Length: 217
Image (tube, rainbow, N blue to C red; front, side, top):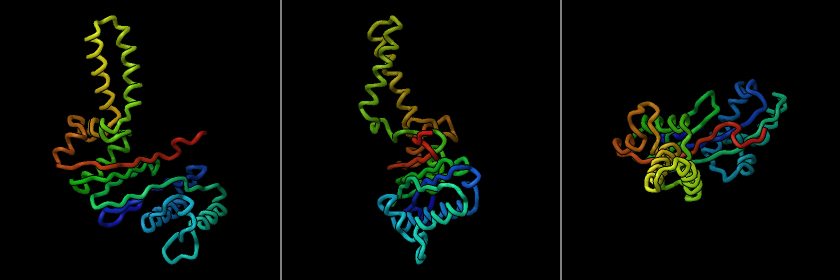
């Protein structure tokens, strides 16, 4: 992760190696941090555009050339897999978890740096899929509801009781998959939604990367 001093611009990048040994090495870390800074400053549109940029401002080496040098030095394939760039008039919080295995950026309206970092930490740990229940696709809700109706119907209860059971399960589902519905990791007596309301703050967007997610092994 790279973030500007005013916390209004930030970048998050996933760089893959073949082993933890290489990923924990100083040369790999310097390369990954340099790539994040490059994204922060240049805001390229995709990985191909990133690879042809200078690794540092004024450098003759591109990101791709620096990557090739690192591959030949370390003896392992190294790949810049994906990245995201945030730029806003609001506030950006960030968090890196588990030895750089999970990274989060969160854009927040209102609040302060401490709250933004706490929310980013919560996202890293609790993995919400959406900000609020309004963001959950109707197809996902319909699928969950179908499962709950089938389960409740087997209870033998009356239709009105079954409906109440289904609605209760849907509410629980929203609380599990949405950031605002989840219990705040640092104080489970309060939801993230209530915490943000108390601080007069709003999460506008977030991104959570976990190294290797979605890669077939």
